[in-house]
Image 1 (spheres, helix red, strand yellow):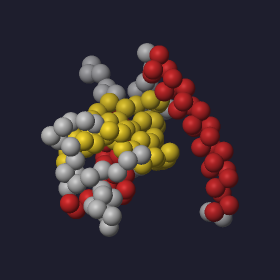
Image 2: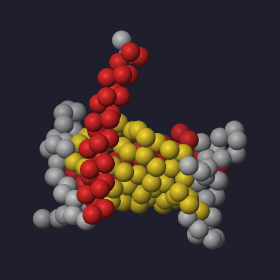
Image 3: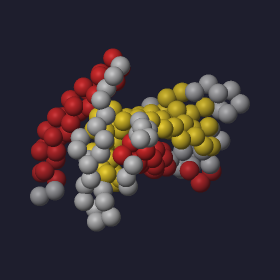
Image 4: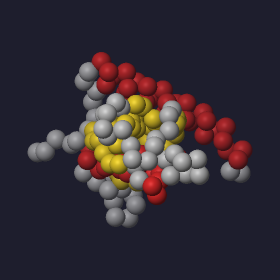
Length: 158
């Protein structure tokens, strides 16, 4: 049986159509790349079609310039019955120098679904290294925090 793939890195060049009015890559373009990498990571782990259930904690640390080599790294840090918490990091650099710098990071939760949109069971990810355990534990802390934030946010949806 083939082992699920826990992580993936997408690489490409930032293009002119990705630019905002300030001449840097638009945050929405970065969020699209994050969603694509999260999907590829979740599908690779679960072997199923997946949908985005949550994207949060996004931090835009530094801008990305047109022509930059962009790397979007995604890895599973927690699994539920059908959900996967994916940690994402976006790095960029001039392709001539390859001096990578962190530009963005966040967490995305993906859910494996069947053709009718019902959640499907996925393989469990078990942390092995000390770093894996820290990330797994942090994912659990963030889940509890999101629950509290969700309760507070109800005022805006009622």
